[in-house]
Image 1 (cartoon, rainbow over the protein chains, first blue to last red):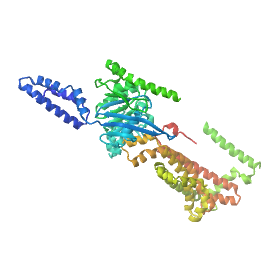
Image 2: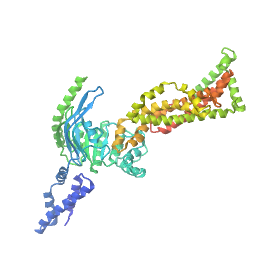
Image 3: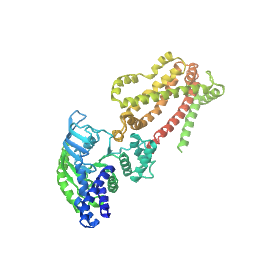
Image 4: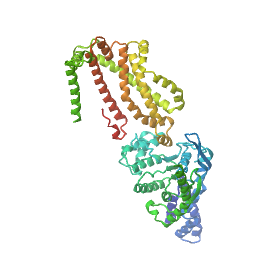
Length: 339
Length: 258
């Protein structure tokens, strides 16, 4: 027998699960069966269904932990093992951007990469997207050992990369059109995404007529419309003013929570990283590698501008900053010597 | 105010030309006379030139120019984009294109006249080679300088290589190409007129050559004025085309008058 206890529990669990719709349905059915079976035993010994379900759900675990358990069971969507990336400078010298990089990113996870300038955070995104090949090591993205550009990975670039000669509507409709949708279908879908990022009414505007924040919204809609399983974001909000930035961060979280995408968010701003992410990766000064990873156990949904006052936020910040500070100093010293 | 000064300057120049030549401070035999030029244009319009009606000469020259312009632009854009996109092709062709570009194109005129005859094809061919290189180099440069971020973004969004070309490379090369259209239309006109000089049966170039041979300087100037008027109209059309093609650009960049 199903009561409101189980229904509420399943609704909470659904909110925490970050998988595709089909997978969510499968997991929810599995959880429902398991809990009902468990509750049936208590009911048989005379307990009220409501109490029996309450006990069974608490034995199953709180939704947050359960969701995490499911996520950890699955193979990571991104797996880097001992990855090295060398570039050749224009003068012909070899330059190592990344060395012995090991990263695992789970399905539906929001990860942030922080590190000093020039530590190879952006290069890592280029490797994951397939825009750049790795030099050594192993890479696996969504099961591909050779990441293909344009296959289920979205990318929001640091600089404006929306097409200046296309209107907002055509910019957002570009992805579906490249994937073979008819123009009418693509525009229909684009209108929906434009309203989701709050740009309704600006469909016919050209990028140069929009503010920086609005252009970022276009870029976000343009990436998300292709429903990527991984969304890479390279300091997307660094050029925005503080208020617009907080607003965009909140919107990113609310849009993301409705998708099942894993996000890798590169930033040099530790506060931003903690406010947004489930896990923070700290990079060493170049050649970059991972210095440490930190779980951010702050509850969701989060309000980006308010969560900074949470005592837990300050504690996590201190912990990570102790690690990051040394790397920032190293990189600062190097920059000074170069000048 | 600007318009008044503009007209004033024109009137002043024509008036001083007229007065100086009447006073024979400058020789009207070499420099012509505005009133003489006006009379000449009037008789051409009413009675036709030695080669036939004036409109026919203008039409022939325009036809050669426009045909040469269109063919030159289209081939220039195609080759420019193709070589701009493909490094191997560009490295194979680069020395040949540079060598061809180093030749003053006008010297190809006699070859075209001999091989294609006195009719229209030889003039069109000369106009084409005049236009081709200007447009080619602009399209090539435009394709080379397309924003790498935009190309990466298009690929990430799922664009195939040919879609990257049509959706990113061509639009970003477009502002280079369109900028070259202004100069290349002038070159097409040069090609057509020089071709007519070298040997033809019709056209403004022939009218000029005939007037020159009879030491009729007023006739030469009259033909030049007609060419200038035609070129101004064409320039306005190219500007209109430019505004249509790149309406996505911020307005400040479009406001180039002259």
